[in-house]
Image (tube, rainbow, N blue to C red; front, side, top):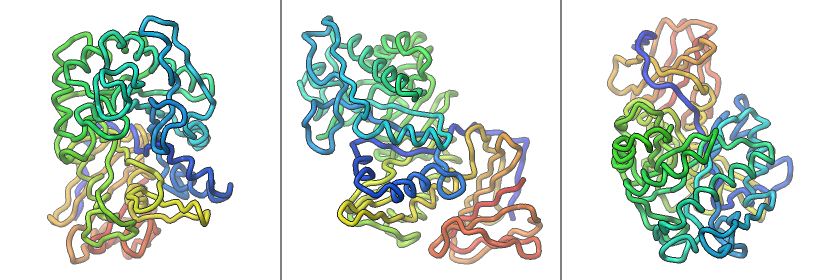
Length: 418
């Protein structure tokens, strides 16, 4: 039924994560302390929750007093031009992100990925941190210094920013903070930022869709100096699906996506495209078809009719957990940083199968039964551990009966082989 081949080695896994951008963590701060701890456990605890290992931070660009969904800048006012001494401001909070970063670090998270949605408006040709616009050429060095200073502020707080991106969706003009870069402009800026950002991996370029990342990779690959500095290539899953490898030998991350939808959805499988099954399938395809090393869901928590993993209710001080959360956790809890994807195949077309070998030698087999009939894998013996995620279970431990594991219809089964 399932065939594994340890001799076939694909990509190494960097980890799985979520974003904390756009001040959503302030929702958590409204909750009782015990409730906040429960949510942190769900995100980062590898026994109680998803065991996420990458935290994506948003570098602010807006002046103080901006609307709720903006992120406050570390240099909110023009210091007097690109060559004037910078006037940085650090509030020790960073739009409520710092305390979550420190909490994540206590759980063992080591990968902190900082992303700028835009430069401050005065550095751009449209004078606004929103609505696209481009970085003025004379401000390039000042913007690079600004990004590096952000990492220094975190370092002084005990958090090492390991990965840094200077643009988010540079191929899309958004009404919220956004900034355009052509692939060639991105390659030129990398050559300015790279030498300044010592000890930080540069990431490029957070394109709106996966296929759109190819143009940015090509521009950087064509420039030896730019190619020297970029260590991770990224793309999102909105414009085009994450279904094929990108043309690079560097690690690639699917660094932002959540499904569309106009209602809060806790279902495992309902055909809407915003259920847990959809996430399980998307993660599988990204790992197997696109060979991603990192998979980062968009928001860990939000409010209202959100497609975040959790929904927070400020008025009642409570939260709800979606099946999307458990779909991601079925992979992230068991496939740890440094794992390598190995050869795996299912004899039945309805089974989506992938497998990984962790650094400790354990193997993790993920099986998503896309069909309407149960399937059985025999000759699986204890001490293997089997976990089921579907409409009735959320990483529930299930027994191995007479050496056989049954894959329920539309269910995601995780098997850990020591």
